[in-house]
Every structure is written in C-alpha cells, then in structure tokens.
Image 1 (tube, one colour):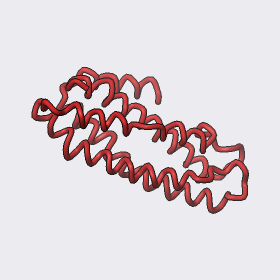
Image 2 (cartoon, helix red, strand yellow; image 1 turned 180 degrees about the horizontal axis):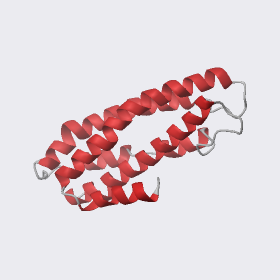
Image 3 (cartoon, helix red, strand yellow; image 1 turned 90 degrees about the horizontal axis):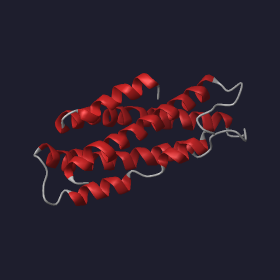
Length: 160
C-alpha cells in the first residue's frame, strides 16, 4: 500500500463508528466481493496454462475460492449481526461476536504470499500471471488494512 493510501486509511481511525462501518462496507466488503471471484478465475487460468511451470502458483485458485466462501460468511455475520449492534451503540453481549470476528481474521494473507512467491510473477511471465500477482498483492494489502481498521480501531470502541 502506498504512503498516500496508508494516510487515506489512517484518517478513518478518528471517524465516528457509523462512518467507519460505512467505510468498511464500501471500501472493503464490496471490493472483496467483486475482486475475489475475478482473482480466482484468473488464478485458475494461470494454473491451467502454466501448470507445468514449477514457479506456477498451483493451489492459488482453490485458496482464493475458499477465501471467497469464508469471507462471504464472515462479512455477512458482520453486516447482519455485529455492525447493526454497533450502530445501536453496542450491547452487553457484543464481546462474543467481536471475539468470533477476531478469530476469523486468520492467516490467508501469508498463504497468498507463499503461493505467489510474495506476489511476484517470474521474469517473462504472461500478462495474466502479472495481473494475478498485482491483484493478490492488492488483496493482501486490503485485507491487512480491513483487519486493522476492525481489530485496532472499531472493535476496541465496543470493548473488543
């Protein structure tokens, strides 16, 4: 993530909770829903065309599809349960859903980096492979910032 992008996101640290939730929904949830299926499709293409290359990101399409399923469920829980509670000012039992969300913020980012050799296409790679690595780098950065905004900024406001 560029310094400018980091500064843009950091300004949300001081936003009120409703505005921050709106930002998370628009900037991260909607973007993940749009980009993950496209990346999974692109990964499947790269694996199909370059599967005999030992540098190919074999297994990436499956990981991205799995991530899409898990993130869809995770985001739905936030959108249907956690965020509405937060918009109403919290709830005595909000700690449990926050703990569940924190537990689900897991290690997919590291696995993306491993399978793509730190989001680096090999020299001479085709345009699809290069776009795939650029896309997984952006996804990893987005996921990291999405989790930071929730774990370090939003959740602590509600005791989580």
